[in-house]
Image (cartoon, rainbow, N blue to C red; front, top):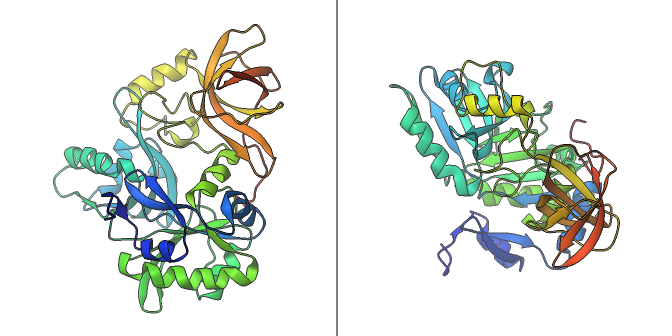
Length: 368
């Protein structure tokens, strides 16, 4: 814990020694950016070479026991039946009213063992809901502070892993559990930047050693440590939703255009009845991208208006795109909008011209 009562990652002292700018992120003291680099340089390193992120604040939970995978499948939106052991899947935990409690990654080890990585702030709630619903014999464990998570992202990320002996051959959304210098490590071919990348999950006490090895291997390749500021600009350029902004209790998977992560043909999942009705009604607002054509940087909460001055929606995430060198945003807009339509964003009382686009805002190498 810090003096402010914030939780700390196993790499906290490393970040402090690097003079990182630290901030409260979901109750955790995490690095936003590093001196001598900053968000733009860190962002560019990921797009062009490689960046190494500490994302140990992310939650970790394990669901195990007879029928564990089937149980998880009956609760979360996506269909675990679509994947095989050794694969990971993006999914959501919804409330019965269709609101999103959290979006998370499920690692399917086997029919009796599923490893989950929720968002930091929502881990406790996800574990609580799963525990309350679990049948006899299925155990739900909150392992939040048993593992660290290091994201190695960028086109040269495979070289970094190979340089430290993690020369894994993984397809997108696949994972493996390996021994690294006598230490168990999970390596998953995924990430939150749109680039080729991996999430490396060591035990908490081994995280510093793994981080130091990865960073030392990245530096000769143009790699640098990257903070959560760059993580946010990278994910926004890809149109990836952030829970609490673009997904949440009031923003359903239908509204967020995340219906691809819902197993509609499954017999059951939390919120299925409401979400099925909402999808069929085609009346709710939908998420769109906005690319600024004037001057200004939109932020969450900014009102969006059409050419007549009528309010048609609200920005859910907004930032400056280091790649495009202009403002971009994700926004919930009324039905009936189309790509290329000119709109106005109210940024602190000033009209900023923009156009509706369909994310991603940039091309990246995630599927490569």
